[in-house]
Length: 458
Picture 1 (cartoon, one colour):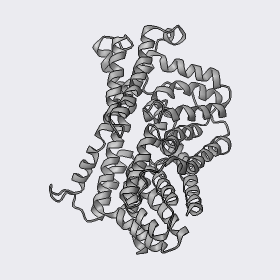
Picture 2: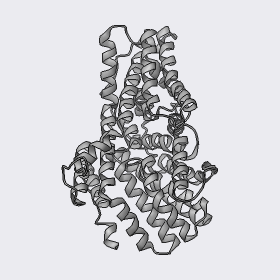
Picture 3: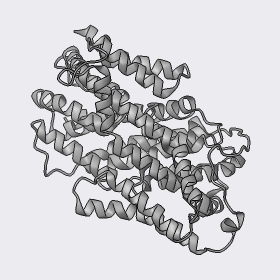
Picture 4: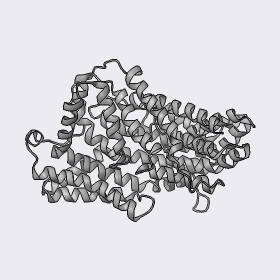
């Protein structure tokens, strides 16, 4: 049984994917190869039938589940490109520069706060990064800010709010956690989830402080290079007064999160299509107000710019969803869970450690905390109830096990988002400068604190 911990499709395919990424192999191809390896290792044929799908059928079916997210990311990328062209994003970046651009650590903390708004106040997730971060790179270069610290600040803002706060994406995460624990045999339908998330969010904040003030406190030199994907910006629009097109850009940005608010109030569960609809409405408003030129080629330029900014991320998310579909089809997730819990036996501490490792491996494989919770809750809840763990300990354990792995994985949007902005001038490596720092500073603290909290609450 111990061998199943290492020689199963999930563990081995994740190892293949990480190894290929470390060797600088293309991320999309790395995930695709890992998915094919997992399926073939599990004995699934490369191609099958509708009744008995093969690896590629499972992969394509898994990709279909992420279509709405991919479309939303591309449209939000187009909105980001249009906001760049309007000069509004640069105006805001210049305001941040004037207010916080003299002290590097203060700027990094403010960046983490601004990133947090993207999960709750203005729920556009990683789409804010290519809007806001590229105009700030020149200022960051002058301050010699280590972009690895900036990656940790952005990742903190993308992750900590949905763990702690029951708003925006946090509401989705808490509902998934509550519903799946209840469906697995422990009724927590009337329980507030957020108080049990305080230790986990605190662990992330501790990791952020370590990154800013200890690990990456030393200055780091960067060259002033042009952005790889950038809209042409009129300097007069940046320095001058607010014009009608600036108000159009601001109104368009408001329409994006206004659509989210309306969708949350009208349709339970915060439908993901609201992001796509909101971005489309924003582009239409900007077109009417003249923020986007009425010439057809300018609108086409915004769409192409959006594909350049977010298209690669969108396709990685599609491929990652296909990989998740293959991992589920192998049955390796259940084998991994059973083997780990068998090895842990009846020891509470060993069981908690095993569950955290399982959560990490599964999240590393499928690339999302939101998708990990349903997979682990069905097994963890009855197991922990049988061992005598309290409901509070069960909530903390499943949340911690699901949350770890999201930060720092090459195919996760929590890692892809920071790279999308910080590598706008080609000087930020996705693996070395985003994945490694965020993995170390967030996953380890969450796991350690999650285990300690569960033992205390047990």
